[in-house]
Length: 81
Ligand SMILES: [Zn+2]
Image: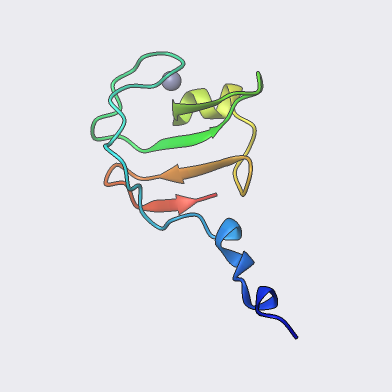
């Protein structure tokens, strides 16, 4: 039994519980200021990832979950995805 079996592969399945970067300033899609608002860091229907307000995520997002998107509240605490 070699050590590689001990590598924790669960990391990918557990996105950080908090947003660790600077809080996004505006929605990449509609440019609504995101200060004080919940936001989604997620994949868009077009392919690339974007920082989105909840409305844009509803319209143009690709859902929530690993490889799809993470939902954060206004304080950067992950509340979904
Ligand atoms: Zn938006």
